[in-house]
Length: 376
Image: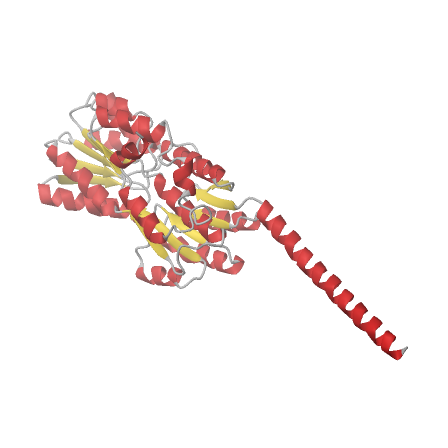
């Protein structure tokens, strides 16, 4: 009898253990299914959502997210430090699995890194490098700052400055966006270097220009002040400032007499080159945030491409002719520069052998010729 009771206890113990294990395992499975069933949400803080560059950034990110079954939440910050900090805080509060931002200054980086650390949410920068060595060290010490993607902006300014020299320009002004912004500053350094090498006089400069109207006003003032002016370099600002500068030069009947270069393509690339409104442009670099997104997607999907902060560098596309502009429109605007298969193959989920080195090679190869070669 005693032996039967012992056996019964043993059986009940085993049954209880099995039930308990099943409950725990079942709960784990249900949690995993719920987590797996919710699309990854990537938060994007951006300066605007209406300009040529920002619209293309947003549409391309949404396209890539759709291919991977993820979602993108966009918050406009107006390129103001306080807005950028609050945007990152709000995006995290809304449940974003990762956040990315085009920071307006180095000074904002420690604040947003701190927010990411506290929430344990990965953060990455797009279109930006960190120039300040102390801030760079601080950011890279964070377990949640996974990296940044940017262009060689000094080379951008230098190449466009040389293009003005090739046009025979001798007297230039620079209209740039935020002073203290690393991209604007590095393009300025590049222009200055090209001007010094080629003997172009820098007559004046205007900063903190982000929209078409202020850019037009600045150009009007420079044209009135300097009759000898034959070149205006537009540092960037998403395409809006270029539109304003072209309008001002047209108003003075100086198209072809004042050569314009610009970073960030405007809305009418072919027309601007055909009518000699612009001598040379750099742009098409809205793939930069796409590569940032790929870094973040792999991270939140449980397949980080690195265990430390990484920087990826790429080059923009340069356009100097109507033929190049037509090709750019056809191959990069009318269709995505990376198709669905190519996007999936940039993730470990769909391509188990994919590495950071592969992503670097893809970013470094990006050009008009690269896109045409892959998609023809």
